[in-house]
Length: 484
Image 1 (cartoon, rainbow, N blue to C red):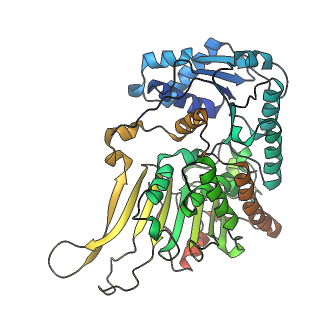
Image 2: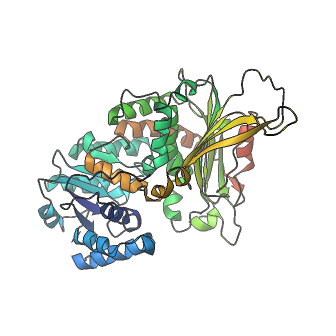
Image 3: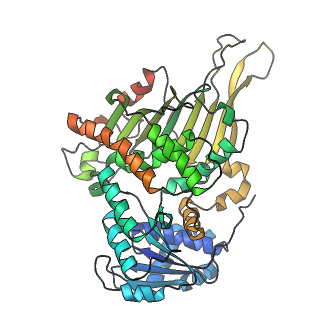
């Protein structure tokens, strides 16, 4: 099975921060792949913008090296690379001054889609929006793409929303969360809303609990300055994991349209109960395996910022009342994996007695690595000797189910940038949604800061602090094992 490529309309895409890591590591190689697959029209143009003085050819040389670094040699097409590079130009721009802006404005064509990607620090979002407006680059049909973090708390998110709203309408603002561009995340909506098999069971009456895990093997070395001001709660829970929770818990929207989907996600966030202190665990990784501790990586021996968070959340609505959602994320854990596990309840009565090996049905949506969906069911063990029950998986990993074409599925950034060009905001966060997420998160952070709690230490290569295990054990449940 090969994914179908639908070309987009002609566009001018400006990437602010074009020489930075996100641009050279994800955005520009992703745009090359879309071009190589035939999705970019002949009239598409990409403009790099950054503070560094550089000519067009120097920028193309930089991008060529970025493509070579990001894409294996056997998947590179020399002619496609050279064709892609001809689309590129560069303008040196001062985000907080006036240098370069007239030259950038002169490059914009009024008869194509205009999009501006803010691949810069959040402190520059407002300045860029203001200058785009001042130089006439905020036409009704243009779009701006804003990277996370979108604010540091509710007050700063509101201020940033207000600043952007002075220069752009809400329908022009694309707040990007790359998790929502993952194939499996979108498949989650298809599994729920396109299959009668699951939707009638998707409620507290049949679901025992839900686990959402985002585990990483890396520490924070190299980005300790940023991370120590953020922590796992702000960096992961408030945005990525909140979005996953919303897609699991939301009601069916009336249509697969931007505001219909985002309205339902907003209802979930507003229905979240406050998290009790007893239902929250924070941790910091120790030194081990030849690598430093969290304190070493951030160069702050007294830091109380968490590199691990586990919590129990409840959604107080008719569908989910009483069903706990367990969220867990951390650095320097056993394996790099992101998954959602829906654990269904046991049958009300077992006609087979209490047999060892009998387990509840389990639906696992795996985001990374090896994207796919797995359903575990109970069957009879083959052979004579009575009725013995065993658990078996019905596995749909994309690599196996879709064949060689699965390797060519666009990554999250590729898909989301194409959605920006199309003007489709379904997989992007709305301003009120971001503010609602901060309104739930802020009291949690404020409570532990007021108590002066220190995160618990945990060994690298494990599953996090012991208290995180107890979070489920005291409810008679267990975390799923973190595995590659």
